[in-house]
Amino acid sequence: MKRWLLGTLGLFLVFSCRTLPPPPPVRTLEEVTLKEIQNLISSEEPTKALQWIVGLRSSSTPVKIPPEELGRLEKEAKEKLIEKFYQAVEASDFSYALSLYTSFRTLYGSEGFKEYSVDRLKFLMAEGERLKGNAVLALAHFRGMTDWSSLSSEELFTYANLALALKNLPVCRAVLKELELRNVSIPKDLKERASQTIPLADYLGGTVTIWVNRGIRMDRGIGVPDRVIGSGFYIDPRGYLLTNYHVIQSEVDPEYEGYSRLFIRPSGRIDERIPAKVIGYDRIFDIALLKTEVSPPFLFGISDVQELKVGSRIYALGSPGGLENTITSGIVSAVGRRFFQLGDAMQMDVPVNPGSSGGPLIDEEGRLIGIVFAGIEQFQGVNFAIPAYWIQKILPDLYKPGEVVHSWMGVSVQEVREGLEVLYVAPGSPAYEVGIQRGDRILQIGDDVVRKVRDAQSILLSQRSGTLIRVGLKRNDEPKSYVLALQKRPYSPLEKLVDFERVENLFPPLFGFTARSLSSGLFAEDFIVEKVYQGSVADETGLSENDPFTLRNWIVDKKKRLVLMQISIKQRKAGFLEGGVQMGALLEQNNFL
Image (cartoon, rainbow, N blue to C red; front, side, top):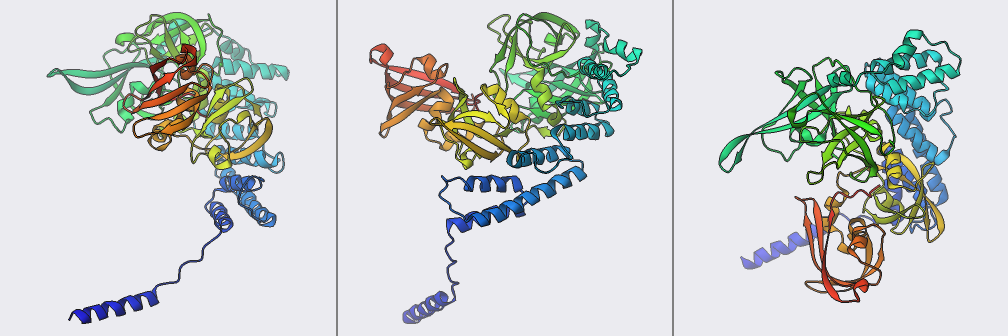
């Protein structure tokens, strides 16, 4: 019996081996790459395919593909891009058409699409929204044009009246000025309405109190009402209004498991609570767009004021402590505070209290210049607002349901004398794929020279994911140029990276210094500081070049959103006496592009 079993098993193995399929042929790296590019073209991703093709033409790539084969693939990808552009125009998807147009211009300049331009596509976007009744979005796209000279006087009058209806007097006046330059006669009534001064008290009609009922919470065994109170303001005659994301966070946060109901209380109607719903929100800029079934008595026009002078008089409207119809005043204390992961914030001394968050901030001309979002309790007169410049950048995306997702290159940078020095390149990001390296100095994005992080972030905010952009940089004083397809930006780029990236690679984006590993042990690792960036956490802690240190502890606290680094160091500035130092940094850094 035993022999029979062994014999049967032997026959089974023999015939099993005979029936096994032959192993697949081993494909070369070139064959795999060609197949991947072909798949990208077939799967309707011509911009990503073109990124690969441009990269393969670089002399530094280890993959060598015959020029005629690359030429054939480029022709296919280019034709696919053109085909998709006209399909997008036909479908009135002008946002996607603009992305494809920008990608084409990045590679081929003014060749092709001669009947279109960036301004033409933006105007088509504006007209599409206007005809659908989306007046706010129509005006946002119209305002995004750089030149109105191609528009007829009739078209300009249409948008002057639209701006007036939305209480956006600055845009209305700018359009009328364009008409005056053409020597076009402007109706007296339109001129008077555009030049009117609206009393400050009238603005209160456009404000609301945001009320989020989160049920009952237990405090030392006693149930107490859990409420969140904030402010908001109308921007759309159909009942759309803006507030802070943190005010309505429980409505959309997937990690929140409790009860949550959102209401608004209109100005002057203290006994009413009207249901509202969240349309879109942006966690990075702390903004949310809500919708209510209310006809607003007053609207706030979104301006594109980039920067107010320090010392300018400003007014905050809202419901501090739930006290509606409150106006407080102050001045702009500072601008350009790097408070968010993207963009910047305005510092002011206008009083801010719980309940003020989400309220509008206006200047003496009545222009909306920002949204109140935070104050520092320990310090009087140190409060912050989100500038209107960034609000108008993301406004069209807020009208889309869900969370706003931005585009990125995938690099952390530091402002230096010449451009933006790359501190870190995220694995799998567009910058990583095309070969951008740490130490490169980014000088140009698209047609724009960049010297500030905010300027580079502003450029990327204007482009949707998948768009091809050209990045000009210097590597060891040698000029280089890369073409990359933007990808969707993760909310917190470092949150996942800290789980698998080597700690020394994270020193630059988190703490602002580079170090070289000397030795590693079971419980500690030795390093020597190579470079410290001015103004960084490491610089303020006193680290300097050639300081040797031992990493004792590396703590990532995702709940508190921070990273702690505990080291033993012999600082040159302290006479190389050994001491212990702890440095901390937030997971949400503001230096990523």
